[in-house]
Amino acid sequence: MAAITYTAIDRGDLITGHSELTEYSFDVPVEQFQKNTRREQSTVSSLSGRRVTTLHRLDTTFTVSTVETDDQTSIDNMREFLSSVAAGEEFTIDVFGSVLTPDNPITFKLDGDYGERLNIISYSFNFKVVKS
Image 1 (cartoon, helix red, strand yellow):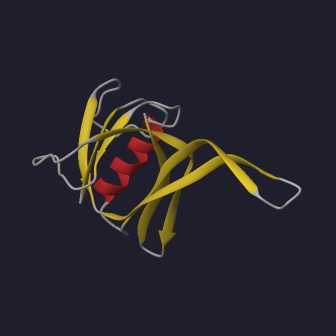
Image 2 (image 1 turned 180 degrees about the vertical axis):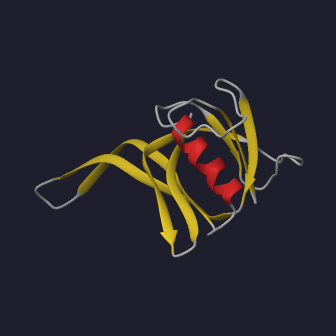
């Protein structure tokens, strides 16, 4: 279980009863929270074959996938959340905590596009994030 906290923005997926610019939190079962690191580097080789690598930076992102659900409240929460942070708004994910029992919330921004998969009667969501 993970806890997500975000500020709702009305981009067409605002849940009935929710207000724009209001902070909301919800728990979501996460199937995957995978750290991905990409190296920005340059490597040169001397005439003798010796290689020298210069590391410029490390870009770290995280891939997040939820478990499948047919619970409409959970589906609506994910749709509103992803729509609300689509323009680079900050949010937090507490991977090992919950709304009632926080552990270590980390601030992120969405990195790239996000997806929603329908498996006959259930949905799962996936997205990439980068620390703010």
